Length: 315
Image 1 (cartoon, rainbow, N blue to C red):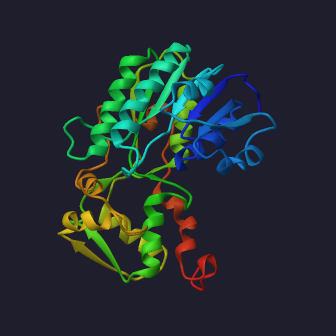
Image 2 (cartoon, helix red, strand yellow):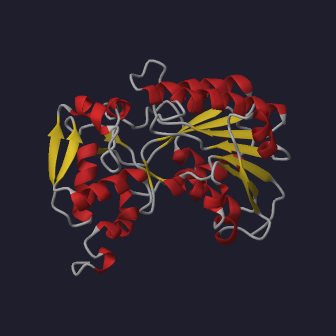
């Protein structure tokens, strides 16, 4: 590993997606200042990833300008992974719109060479889901407040058995004979592996003579929600009844208060009514020289959801 003497500030360092980027950035030789609300939860990163002194874990409050400046101080690049699927004490507008504005302004003030912001695929100001509206507003704040940025719009992100999407369905399949399907399950996704998202970050940090671009981060194949669930259930060798839930929007007003894996909010129902596939209007992973992994690459990690895990007699 070669030390390139450049430092990156990462906000939202405790997220699932950030974990994959941290590993690749360490291997690329960058020094990392990782900001998180819960630094104690990331202590193992310093020993598992990187060389001694390469990774610094810092507690950060993204709504406190001085806390943000402390993380960005003496950094060359900044990356924002902060995001949430549920509104709780912090609203979508606060985290996805107001925070990116502060992030971009302070990054610009401290002369950060390049800012990378993680958004979502197909945001729009007129989108019925508050989540997507806030993501679009956040992108606009980035564009307005810094000179050199890249915005990544990922579709459904999958990982090595650690993504929330399939983990939720896996947990549900353990305890329920029925898998409820919002509406007809025809909504399409382009699942992309978290490591491909991370590779895009590494490429964009190195790229020259290019800035202020949006990339659609998606896999090479599209799947309906129903087909994804069927593939998953087949791989974990569990026969479950997939039942359309035509009244799920009404039910979600109650289910939003349920524990995982049954939690679903009205806003998520609105999200599930819109495709998450590339528009063709923006560059893709292939334009960065990255060949996206197919969904089959994560099949071995799904064995954890089989009865007796990978020691299932049918393996």
